[in-house]
Image (tube, rainbow over all chains, first blue to last red; front, side, top):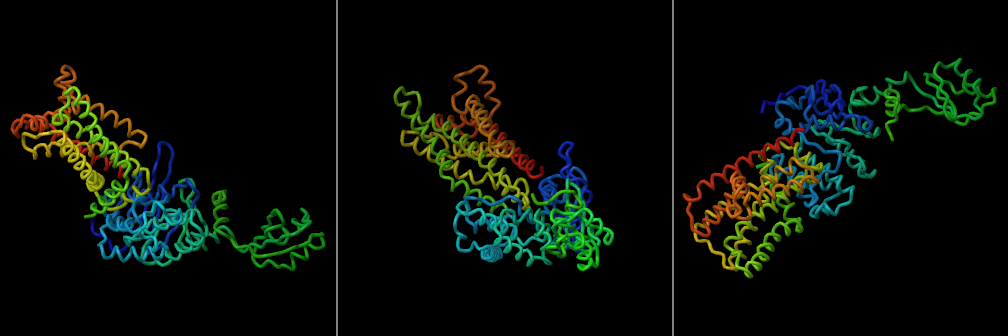
Length: 313
Length: 240
């Protein structure tokens, strides 16, 4: 095992690629995740998020390129990499014939955590995930949501320096989802977290930075705010109106450069839009303005703009 | 002792699956009782000549159930999660193999105990018989590991059939000397006939270590090589 470098990024990937025959599952991805950062890989199913995580966890051999985790190369020193990471796989990953308590001891044990610490951490995690009162029951009898929560807890029990959360809240009820978000928030700062998700709110709410990945390639990188401002120069005002004519829209275009027709009105992208001006243009043309409001740019808009696809199915 | 936790988990998985455990232990015992009853009629089967073969048949059953459960485990994402733990291939191999050793011992003890009820006698060293059977148990568990690590759940039964036939026609069950010819020369290249011959020589004729040394070396050699391949099979699975 090589000595652990004290500084530098927690995760760094250099042109990481994985081919299956002619098909590129991951195509030359670069990553740099700072220590303590919560970094989200956002993309639709099949974009290459899980393949990336599997390579970073030394489960899958990169076809080309490499990466380092806390300074350890994934190609040359997988044992050193594995001693600082934990993975919460996309599917629920638990031992069905064991109790929740035994599942946590198993993961603590294979990561070499001492018994006392394992017991304390397991207790905390079971409490947090709302499983404490059924901790000694075999998990086979658990509901889907309970299994999922246990599966995530199993990634946390070894106190990893770098945590990979592959779609952590997929299929969870809103209440459990919020509980897990709250816990992830708590880990922020101490633990470096790489999270993959196709839930925009999740990336928006939790991540320090977001990398958008589509068809095996990175299409954008930045904070949620940076990504949102990258696609829109200013504010978007939505006008919902009746009897809107082509003539009325053209009249608006004489005042504002960006005017888009929508199903029930127009969207005006400009700074300092005056509602009075809009009324003055539309009313004489027989248009009834029902409502106007400022539209918030969402990551969904960013995604649509960058890839031409809606992220949500 | 990181692999100890893995051993413990797999041990619990084995013991908390009563159906497959019952079949693995129960079938060979049933087989011994049935054959013994048949033997009583025409005097062909004696418990002393039957017991080692039935024990080896039990290990083939064990190989099957070990292969099935490893293959099933591999399809679960728990397996990927376990592979992200800092364990080496040999630690994975022992973590998955060791839980089956107590099952093999119980099989052997039961078969010999029931054989004793019917009048089984060991004229030579009991320790030698135990050694031969333990080596065979390790060999079949390792075969189970290789099969489970390399084949899918649907393929495992076919591999099991091949190994079962190989073991039978390789002399794990019938005395290939009696069949002779091609069977004899093919069987000599596999460890099964050597193990069975050695065990019967010790039990019936009271043979000592010197008498069965060559047979024993065959068995030790095969067991070591197969166990080595089992570790390689795990290594193959760790990084796809």
